[in-house]
Amino acid sequence: MRQPSKIPHVVIIGGGFGGLAAAKALANAPVRITLVDRRNHHLFQPLLYQVAMAGLSPAEIASPIRSVLRGQANATVLLAEVTGIDLANHRVALAGGELTFDYLVFAAGAQNHYFGHDSWSEHAPGLKSLDDALEIRKRVLLAFERAERAAAGPERDRLLTFAVIGGGPTGVELAGAVAELARTVLATEFRRIDTVKTRVLLIEMAPRILTAFSEETSRAAVAQLEGIGVEVRTGVSVSNIDAMGLDLGCERVEAATVLWGAGVAASPLAAALGTELDRSGRVRVRPDCSLPGHPWAFAIGDVAAFIDGDRTLPGVSPVALQQGRFVADLIYRESSGGRRPSRFRYVDKGAMATIGRSKAVAERGRVRLRGFAAWLAWLFVHVWFLVGFRNRISVMLNWAWSYITYARGARLITGTFDPRPSLAPGNISDPDPDDDPLLPPSKPQRASAAEA
Image (cartoon, rainbow, N blue to C red; front, side, top):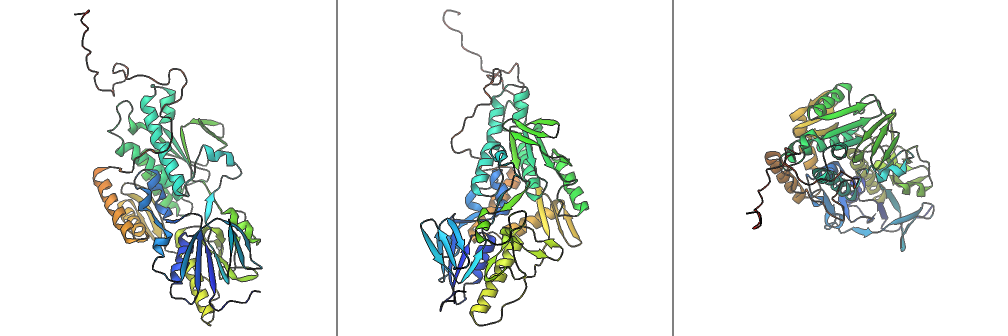
């Protein structure tokens, strides 16, 4: 075992909730910190769906990691890709270099999981990063733009059909946001299509949605979703996804936009540790979040499989935050010559999911909220935990404006794209008020001199 240096070096892999919480909690500890991440920003993932649905811009839910830690003299930030980890020799290999450590905090997060059908990712993007959110935003907005140009019929119907796979909080929030976008924000902006008639399906293989919540809360969520036009389909599984739609067993659903919220798996970097993993690729850890046989190496957050009684703690931000602070306290005590705590204890602060404007569900123990009260609780919690005061003010003002006016200022389509619908004959039509009553009357053309 490598002997600690005079000033212990703590290497933190990942600038998410857990990694950043650990770094900040070590601000006054007698250690050197190096935080490594392949992205330069900390992302507030619970609000990622708001970027995907054009409710917020990326900068409102992300902060540069260097900015967050700029006042912390013992912390260094590296923008780098981790390529390997050698626990025995206390080394982390980077693309173009390496680091040695006395303590390692592995907080590499998670990625989308397609359960062995990775080819589906091309047609059904998941939501784990800003790039994912911007891709989803482009696909959703383009579907409406293409529908405006499509002839009435099957192609237009396909373009106005959205399928969200997965009935957990991410899927529920995405489905509700798509329905709200179509029914309120876009309702008066198009002339050839009626966006209120947009079809939104939420598909869940389990008998009910939000299985981590009580049955009563699950039923309340279904009622609120159906109230804004979402078709909730439970007990059905997806057998195929392609460019034109998806198959639900023997049923074919033609949908131009399919979104994935059905599952996540730990970062593939977890395998580089060489320790035991669970079925989702998460690192099995000891009661103090350390790796078996390596008491100075820890895994926290989405990448860790922490057994708490008869359950494995979920991959949610409160777990990562509390584990990050616990590990930081452990390192602080040990590096100061104190006794390290033996066990991490999670304090469950409840769960919540937003469904739409003034609609949400929340529960903590026996306390269960729904509707506007749950939405206010959700709003307060998420704004409070945003990193950076500027972000809190910006998000609050943006939401207040959107709530009053139904406006979505971030509704931009960027990058390269083809605005045309399918190029099959008859799918694109010119504006014709006689064929489409949504069009305004055309202006009369001036007669030529020959006709006069």
